[in-house]
Image 1 (cartoon, rainbow, N blue to C red):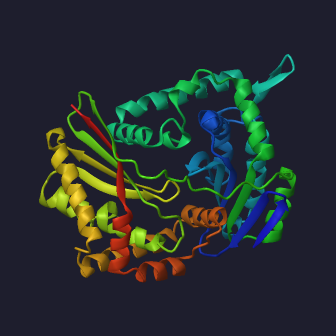
Image 2: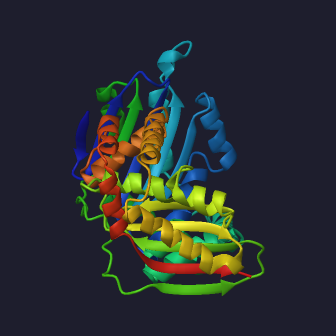
Image 3: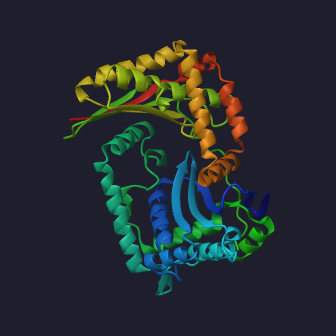
Length: 420
């Protein structure tokens, strides 16, 4: 059941008896902005750990425990041109508990509190987050962002993204950038909170054995007012190919990291989408892939080698852990695997196994409430809803020629090597 609670506030109730839990997702969506990435990241930490009624993490954890071990978290994500600020709550369905407590009402009252009543203080007429709590979470975020340089796989990926996307939001993780942390204040983060609450388009999902009318009634108290709907132009357009941008960086490390970014002009859900999925599975996205079997297993040139597609950035990322002295050879062999796919030099049997793997992964996701709800949200944001049956049919329909066409469109844009 879908209904609009206000302009730009959308509710989807997904009744099911498959799960003994109720999953709630509230996603505030707006165009991504580099200037607010770090602000939103810190805000998520603040709202996940405290509120006016529950001023400490201990107090907040206690109320979740009293709701039979409910789980609550906040999250910030990027999807192409879109930024999402999310509240997620999972709680037991009281219908299946002794005495049948109304945990749905309790859960929505809790969500109302943490969303709408943050721990704030007002000084000289200016409202901001509680200073002590703010300072603690600000320092925690700075520590987390500084630690990025210690995770060499993540560090290499981000450096490759910087080469490819420049100084834009697409180059940075959803957690933001360390350089912005120091300038954040309790007041500036609170101002962004108020803007999100009143201006972002809202998508609410409730899945479980629930009554849709009861859910809508419980949401009345949230008083989410009218706001404009945002643009659905989520995909970041790729510039025309202009050669390969390369960089080599040296650090004292034992295992070199080679990251390659390819242009892949396929949109989420378009008529080449499923072919791109199978292509990626054959190239580096599954244990049956050419990168895994040829680069890693047969030639022993990589500790790991894999690929993944971001349809909203129209890129394919290859990551490999290698001996730095073999970097030229590894990149050449990776290119050969792509060329083989473009020429149709792969077995139909391998492709069939990859298809089976992809289908099994998608079907297994139906047992995870979070993934089911996430799929519903993705369908609404892209206006391309896709159920499991659609997925299976789409994957099964892909031919070897379809895969070759995708490989032919895939072109190397960025090469980054981190080596000793």
